[in-house]
Length: 231
Image 1 (tube, helix red, strand yellow):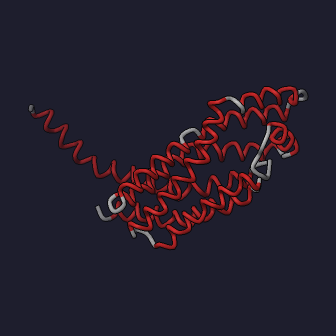
Image 2 (cartoon, rainbow, N blue to C red):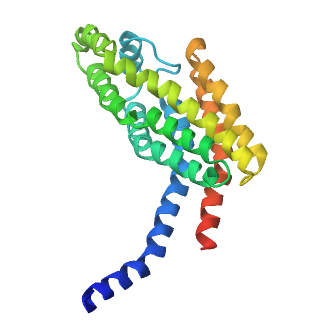
Image 3 (cartoon, rainbow, N blue to C red):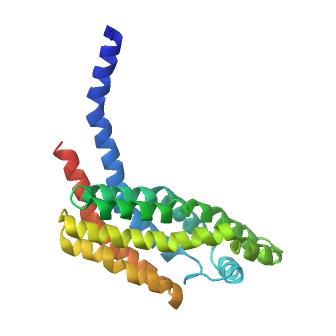
């Protein structure tokens, strides 16, 4: 190994703690912000409830103000970045003391949220349709797209994956005792509320469920920051 290679290795080793700090800070921000951003997206959702059918979405988007629709779209776009990373951050906090549950929770959460960005262009299409004089002509096409097998798969993966991820990671954090157990319990408690939102068609349950996850996740973000300070 020559002198230049030795110097390169030394520089890389010196940079590693800084890089780790930045990555953990990024994950902590995602853990803290993700459930809040998703809750706000449900607040801004022009449909008010969990939407079923293109006609309902088209009608409510047309009745809502343009600013509200744009806010809804941008919040969902932000969630597409924050949501998957938040599961990684939560899992890393519990991984050492509850490895299997933490790993399975991260995997389920990623399978449930990596496709979030797919839905943003579809929602943007409805926003454009609502502004168009003949936008209702495209409702049958939108229904056909929503019924496509791959879209149905993404929707089911979202519902099952993100809920299972929260449940597994909440239990993992409870077992690991790295955060107050009441915080872990809030994460788990948010799961049935979010699940009931679909059959009951009540978006408010989604909001309450994600706010519970937000409160429970805040100590997880702080735990990530404590790891930064102690290393």
